[in-house]
Length: 291
Image (cartoon, rainbow, N blue to C red):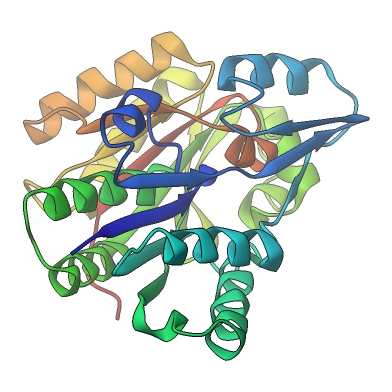
């Protein structure tokens, strides 16, 4: 079968991994607006360039959803190219209209484009963000390239998203509070006392699960808490920003604690940084099944 995976740029997949599987993975970019400038994530600006811009800007960046029209164009193009199946893996539906727009595009094309229904189109709600689906998408591409069926890969993806847990160590909460997307950060009142929150982000719901005094304690406490929530001997991923030495310390301590290093390291892209800011560390683990 001729199969392709379509995802969006919030997946934060490392560019080298995207390039290595360019015939299988198609990443659609979000448009990011900062003041009077608009950028296409992964195309017009690097994460490091975006970190610098939002750190200096008085404006709050905004992310535009991927429209129904863009999905129609993408799906139609795949149909014209003779694909037998498309697996579309998208950002958490409670945090963006993007997933719903993909469903609408599919419905319109099934009604209006002759023969479109013959192409299998699976649209998957990841219920998560960033490398929470960047890593599973990469692994799904490898499975398809190795000859696994679409059914097996779809089951794998749904299983991963059923167990995905994201944790954010927040070192500066200005953007989180202003964006309003991470409710737990908006309600956190301990910054003036030097407290750093560990925030869980599971199925789009955010909760402060730990408060630590100072950056070093925040790393140590996060290692202890997150490792206690992870299913033993399962892969974990880390999302970097501007906290280089602390990121390295987390990797060292967590690897020692669990006996394995991260299977994916990536930088926080513009869509994620719009809501988290540039001073955080993200960790993704496999927790207990929820559905």
